[in-house]
Amino acid sequence: MHDPFRFARAFKGYWLKATQRRAADEWLQSATGTFVPEQYTWRANQLCSKRNRSILAGTLRSIEESAFDPSNRWRIANLAAVRTNRQPLRNLARRLEDANRAVTPAGMLRATYLITDGSSPLYNPAKTQQLGRFVESTIELLEPRTASRAA
Image 1 (cartoon, rainbow, N blue to C red):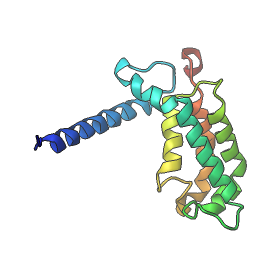
Image 2: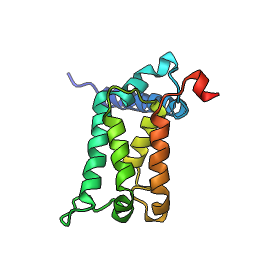
Image 3: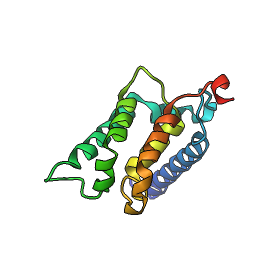
């Protein structure tokens, strides 16, 4: 039997999940400590998972390595900025890979933005001068703050 509303239900489910993810990300952008509201723990766990950390670190390493490769497959990256900021990018990749140290959802969202958004300093030539500081502040944002550290 053909269900004429199957597509509508699937679209509604996708839309609902995307809306929930946006709401969670909006709140989690400021999650620099260890507290996460129960309704957003699923997204925080997703962002901070070992798998996600590994994917982001691997992507950073590939971009950084390709900046010095004449056959460069990452032609969209701002390679001059990548070459200039090689060490900070390596530090960020190492920090993401360090599974023994917790990370904040806010830091993971910022690292994701750096790698996936075309307007980030990693890709936008107009923001070349901002890349080093952006990467350093992302590393700082990955560090969970305790109540005593936040004060």
